[in-house]
Length: 284
Length: 225
Image (cartoon, rainbow over the protein chains, first blue to last red):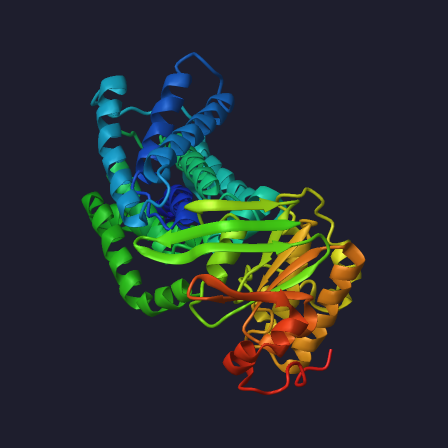
């Protein structure tokens, strides 16, 4: 029983990470129609930057905050590269983000080396129904839920958030009322970068990251985003948690090396089942 | 005031507007009529700055707002949010002045714009354009897909806006009777060129316009404003 509780909690925590990465896909795709394959790269940046900042430079909390801001800036730079040229086709931008993620792998090796690294997180554990659960994993869940509430408030209550929603809803009408749709796309990339960076900063104390960790993060985050139809952050959160818990149960009771395959199979199944819905949502 | 002078717009090798000139004085209502594909929407988008002009000039004496063809709502957002976003450039985000001008909007202020009827959406589109307090309002196909009674109601609102706020209105219409009834002057655009212009009375009496757009019938008799 305690094993099951441990797998469930760690699965929810990992799923929250996928959801944060996935919501980055959603925010960027809604505004720019670009599937940003550098989304996993933002998470790796998040883990590595927080590792460097926590190495005696900054205290916990502040280090993560600076990491999120830095990853937001990295997201903005990726956005400038991907959609900076007016009229860039979303498919071309997708390939550019893929190229950026490959380039960044070289940056990771140069700056942080090839060995997996893991910054210190919250120490200690709490007992839940007889199972010891790391405090860091509970922090991941709490921070994710807070982030999703903040995202919801940002999009529904702030003028900038409404502008982003307007660009997603009807780019032509947005341009007509004077919204610079391309600039909003840059903002979406910055938000996506911050979300990915937060995911990496939160999960890296529990899961050591290396230069090649971007791909599994990108795949799992994309699977969560696909669960939300690439439009709904709420359903992306649900998809991420389902994916994280499934992966942890598979790793705990079967074989840990199957986790990525589970993500891929799940994404495939969802895309097949929901293909009709995607067409309808795109038509809207 | 709006002055369009010798404007040329091309899409690749195709010429959409060929040395088009048009003028609307402050507080005037001017109609632009013409068949499908004549270049009316291109001219509207050029005036709004959405389409680059190859040569010629467009001088506006103030802010331009557009009511686009097909309403172009933010469908998943409320009417209030649609209105508020209309003030993106102007800064005054309080929609109460629009509710005073178009009181019917209050009845569905918190409904999603995508759930409204065509006439209601057109009213939201007009209100959204007015949120930027424009000196020039360009309306692309006010009557498209709407019942005559709803069009007549919208036309009354448009006259009120023009009279009370002194807003210059450029009305692009396929419903020529409505355009000539509402406006004091009109231009006929055909195949990217202005072919006829003058007061609406002159155009209504022009045999060429009557033959092309009314089949020789009396103008403006079908719509009571």
